Length: 102
Image 1: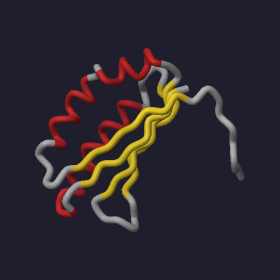
Image 2: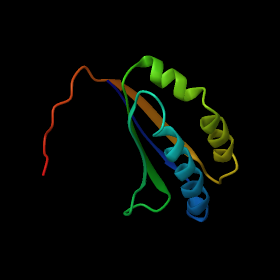
Image 3: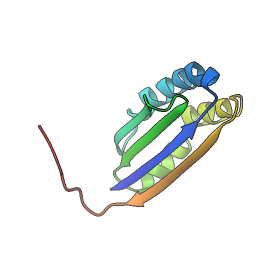
Image 4: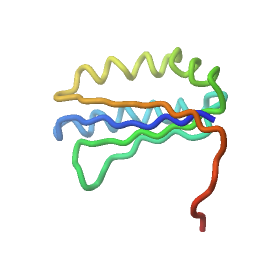
């Protein structure tokens, strides 16, 4: 499994624009082959900070995701936002171990 985790920070005035763009991205990404989880979540303690978490079945799924039309639509929208900062990292996870579940 491949885990992708990151964050994007935007000017507080651009939060709604990013929310709308991310919502469309999440809907389409969750339909992709090999996508196990995909979330874009706003940090309620830090306005303008959004967390990204993804889980993918394999390398082919990650590579395919980067070539989709919804990624091609989303990335240019980031450049229209003010004060954008972004960091995304990939982690190769050979196994999953549940730490807590209700």
